Structure formats: C-alpha cells, structure tokens
Length: 92
Image (cartoon, rainbow, N blue to C red):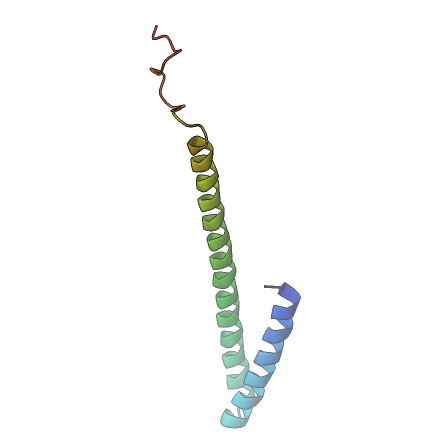
C-alpha cells in the first residue's frame, strides 16, 4: 500500500463524497461534519489494512523460520541435537 497513492485516492473519494452530500443535504455544515466523519473512517480502515498486512507478513516469516529449523534438524539423519544421551556423550 503506497501511502501517497492512498492519500490522493482518499482526497478524491472525500471530494466526491462532499459534493454528493452537499447536493443531497444543501447544508455546508452538515457536509463538513459528514465528510470529516468519513475521513476518520477511511483512516481507520487504512490503519487496519496496514496492521493486517504486517501481521500476515510476520506470520509467513514465522512459518518459514520454523520450516528452516525443521529441515535443518531433518537433514542430519539419526541425530537428535536436543538429546544428550546419544552415543559419544557422557552423563556427569
């Protein structure tokens, strides 16, 4: 989500919203209040979308890291690196 493109799109959408609201209501005060509410709702939606994208990327990164660790453990046949009682280790 490229921020300048989002802001330009938001301004365009708010302009269209304000024009249509003014023609429907005929009140400048009501139009300004409703447009401000719409702007806040758009910003909340943008924030939630960014949080979702970050969450999804972090989840994918965690899965890849787990796969790498699992494949590293699977590449060593017969070795359990987390066990100390395999041959060659001394229990003291």
